Every structure is written in structure tokens, then in C-alpha cells.
Length: 255
Ligand code: SF4
Image (cartoon, rainbow, N blue to C red; front, side, top):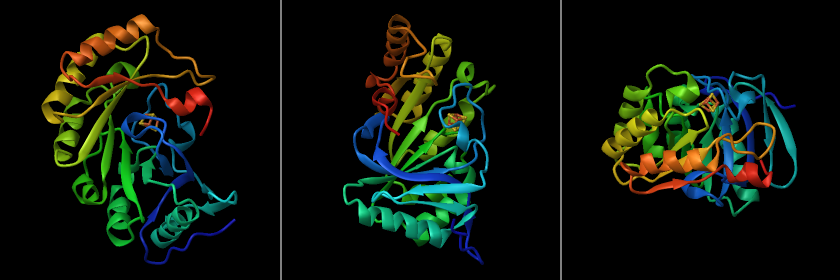
């Protein structure tokens, strides 16, 4: 195990770094380097990355050439930049760095420093729950694409996400944005309509991906097709480019 360099450098908590194909949203099938930040500001009842909800002690790096290495958290900025550079050098098909979590914007100050001082050699996609606006303005100049989730209260228990989602999407007005809306059998129809209206008003032209939540134990959807079609129809009344897209990586059994 390697101890991270620190000194005066900004540091961050990460849980894993690996290359795979993007399995969600508008960039499905593109080769991405996933840089997963540890720690999240909310607790979705269907969280698909439970190992990254809190600040973990170690970050595992799986390099494209098959080597693996474990780093102690927190990682210093030069350490992360060197890892990302090395991964992109080893796999020239990596099209983007997917900055994901957890919720990466919880460590927004680090993100802003990383992307401005030592940007990755390819563009960056920010995967976010779109609830943390603090520091976003400083992060966005380093981001090529924003993949923003809309978190419905019936799925997350978050009492009132609406104003935070509105503020987040308004800050992203000049970025390339698409929105994902995870749904299951218990998703409340009125919340889907409210979220779709909010997206239409704050991110006009964005594609909305209605994402059936996948069972943690296997590739089964937690919603039947009739209910899914009904929720997608409600969303499409407000967002014309509404599509249904499951998490492809779960269906085919890849990371
Ligand atoms: S926002 Fe993402 S990481 Fe956080 S609880 Fe929800 S699914 Fe899990």
C-alpha cells in the first residue's frame, strides 16, 4: 500500500478508480475512467454505491494494465493527478473522466483546485445528485458534461429537494447537461410531474433519462413495465426528449 503525498496540497477522500464503459445516461458505451469520491450528503434508500457513502480509509486503483494499488486516504492532488494521467496513458480509448461518488460536490473545493491546476488529459463528466451548489461555479469551468440526477422524495426521503435542484440546474445553464431520474414501483407520480416541470424550466433542451432502479441482488427492475411506461409518459408531457434507460452495466454484469 502506498501512502499518499500530502504536505500543503489539497486532499480528497476517494474510494476507487477504474476504467470501464459508461452504463448510464447520454454517454452509455463510452470508455470512461471512473474516479469515485467517498462521502455523500444524502441517503437514497436504493443506493447503488453503499461503499462510498462515507469517507473510507483506502482508495483502490485498478490500472488498465491489470495492476492494482491501494492508497491511504486522503489523497493529495498531485497523487490523484498522476494516477489519472497514468490510467489515460495506459488506455488510449478512455474518452472521459467520470467524476462520481458518493457525491463528488461534497468535496467541491478540491474538485475546483484539481480541475484548474492539474486537469486530466481528457474531458470530465460530473455525475452528481445535483443537490450541492456550494462551490459549483468554480468546478463547472473544468467540466465538459454534467450528468445530474433528480432525487425524488419518495425514493430518497429528502423532504424538499426542489429548490436545491432548481438552483443547481440554473447554475449549469451554459454546460452540456442531461438529467437522470431513478424510479421504482413506489415512486410518486406527482413528484415525477413536478421534477419534469422543473427540468423543462431550468434545463430546457436537456434529455431526461427515466432510470428504472435495479435490484441490488441482481439485474431485476424494481418497477413493472406498465408503471414505468406511465411515469415516462407523465415526464414526457413536460420534457419532450424523455427516454427510458436502465443501468446497462448492471444488466450485463460489468463494473
Ligand atoms: S446520491 Fe448516490 S451515493 Fe448518495 S445515497 Fe444516493 S445513490 Fe448513494
